[in-house]
Length: 232
Image (cartoon, rainbow, N blue to C red; front, side, top):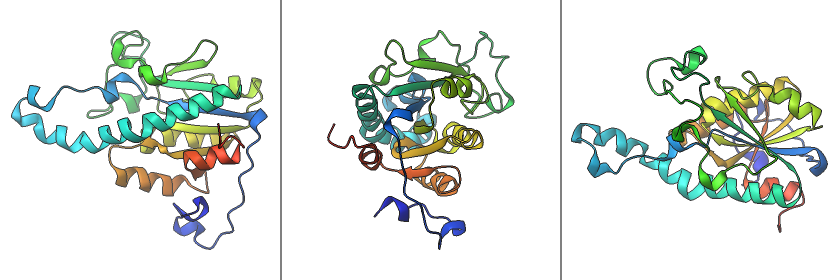
């Protein structure tokens, strides 16, 4: 299916979807929150039986990360780097050891209530996607990579107009960042096969909400084709 026909919400069922025009000279890649804490976990056998159900529920996410999201994000990184395009990384981590600097959304009970001090292993970007020297890395204590950092200013100073987004979680930090970018008048593309949510259903639902309003949703190959880098 062509990318224009995927993830259409009721708002855009009959809309004429415009072509995407990505200027390689003004396009950047932003990778969000693909950090050790989200992809590392103990073996099922090492856990008490009471925790097996939760482990099983998260297995599809971990499979998607290892087989789809991380490889596709690495391909994006390699291609943007090969063409001298700007690469940005955002990670969620607290600046204080006790996490009291975190925004309210990062302190609510449940999944989001993770204590990730900025210098600990858990908060680091996964080795496969580690930043290279000279690439901008921002540390945020909010869902949006713009709200909690100076990323907007830095991107504007670097004359970035088009932002290609990969990362996790589609329905949380990715969505929040995409909305912030759109509100700041950046042209945003979300790479559907370089993102993930806790479930595929949440991932697809959020992309349908975001698409055609705050961004265009495309595949990795579609994005590289629009940039003229498909054969890279």
